[in-house]
Image 1 (cartoon, rainbow, N blue to C red):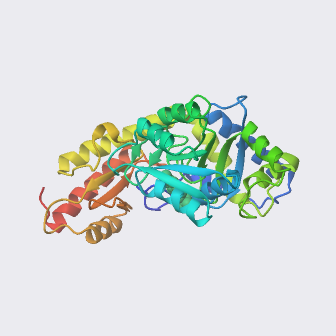
Image 2: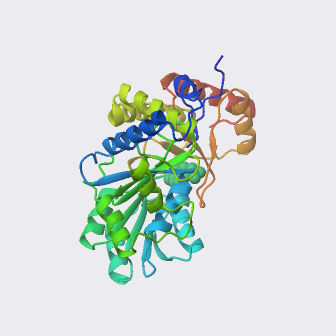
Image 3: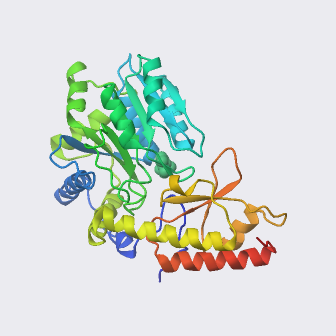
Length: 374
Ligand SMILES: *Cc1c(COP(=O)(O)O)cnc(C)c1O
């Protein structure tokens, strides 16, 4: 009955049948059961971030991950605030673009896409620009799959007394991120990445004293530049009666609660990390055997998603490669780096060693069909 192709992508991802089944209920958004589920999810997310009892709040926000990022940037920046974004890929660039769109002052400290960010360079950029009040950085830069040194950037942010906001969209739930220990003030991830839920909302982990400070300095009005993406108003609503201000994605939230249960069964963040890392190791070993070369140096590569260079062979064309694999029942992902021709293979979602091995066999067959010898 369940024949969907496995998704080797950065999301939406393959989810379990039981997560999909959890959606077979029509719950009212004011139903007491629904309100209880929302409360449980908010608490459980704090535990995953090792932030339980450490002064953090979870705010759920309708929409995909980008909506959550936009709600943070648009809602926590005072009129005289300024951002410094750490950029080494498309998602760091997107944060910058959000600030520009909202006409919020912003600059960037950029690195090549093939390099993790360097915390000392972030410190130097702060020394050069005292107007900066907020730092934005991406944890797993899904453009390439590299992991940025958030803990080190957190130390720099604390030393310079800046607010730190982290886009941990593609790592949260599968890479340990102790937000308080790493000095993260705001973090965003979404329902359809490593928690293995379905798309529909993002969630923000936020330091409560910073939320309260914004409320105090604005007589509770907040700084939001948008009505629907007003993070503080959303928080107030969830705190007051447990409800969303506007229609919540009720089915997605039921699926997410089930996904969190399954994450617990797998052994939490550590258990999920072990499976994804294993998927990655099987993939990388097999791809190297086939003659593929990764874009990143292995020491900079995370186990979430990997960029591979196009093979240097006249018969290779990505579109044909993609379609032949798709016809065999495997979905991979195009590349996103700007300075090299690459494609990407994700090793996250409800996929296991046997799925990765089947993908490798299909890639071998596809190369033979294309008469690409490496
Ligand atoms: C997936 C992702 C996003 C959000 O993308 P949406 O399409 O809005 O869900 C943001 N940042 C990173 C690093 C991501 O991997």
